[in-house]
Length: 138
Image 1 (cartoon, one colour):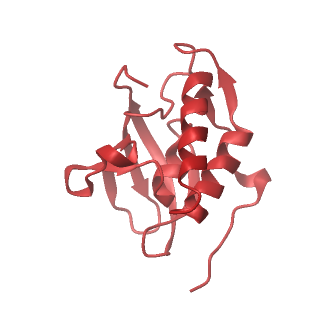
Image 2 (cartoon, rainbow, N blue to C red):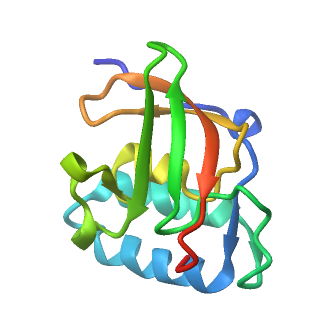
């Protein structure tokens, strides 16, 4: 199955609070052996993130524990998920890990942005963020 990549120039900007970036970096480094691909992609995303102080994230930015409403532009399906750490993930309950390909793709994105990511089955998906609700825990 062919894996597609998005060139760096095609990716929308992402924003993260500096402490959250540090925590995600530690997670990615600790997961390198179990999830090498997701770990590498997460580290690359963190590397390009625009960092800000806690509480200064732009509105409608995906942070940890945010609820994200997005549309799969290819199939038109709409989903609402909560972005969580792996230990809290439960796909049936709509909580997706930040180490899944889609979870990595959502981190730091803003409502209105789109990004191409492979799903768990390796199929390319163009995801458009419709809205983001902060949990206040980010």
